[in-house]
Image (cartoon, rainbow, N blue to C red; front, side, top):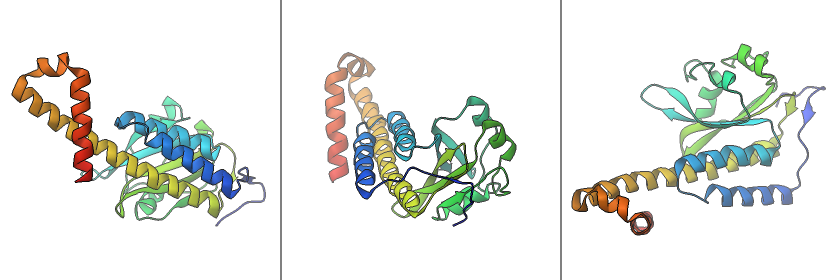
Length: 218
């Protein structure tokens, strides 16, 4: 791992600190089946747990090869408008999607970083990027950013990797819920009309949730 004498070390965590943070993150990630809420909880919890300046989560569109921004915490609108992130243009994300965490001590001087000028304007310096994997297949990446040169050691990398695994599972569950909910609402609408869904939201929600649970357990 590349280091620098002037690099900032993240506050040291004991194994108990990591365990506590992971436990809290797991509770937060699984607190909702609504995909937007799950994604926001992931980036917010990760930023707080790792004590970094920002976190971004991107999911892969396999047709276009683009990593679409799904949720972010701590980055400005100007930075997010910098342009698309393509696997063919971003060596960092390409390596990460192959299953290898990538640590960049200084994005301002690392040619692998796709948008160096935008990173300079945002004040970003160090980045750690790990894959989001579901059943061994990368479906996206999660990045954490700091605004001073920072050393991410093996414990930090392992911690973010485990967080990413929990996050990927939560995303898969939320997507499953959305798919089953859409199918369920379509069937209910066809049988009894949209008015039934609109007039009986609590009852429909209960049946829908039970249907999702039974589907996941089957």
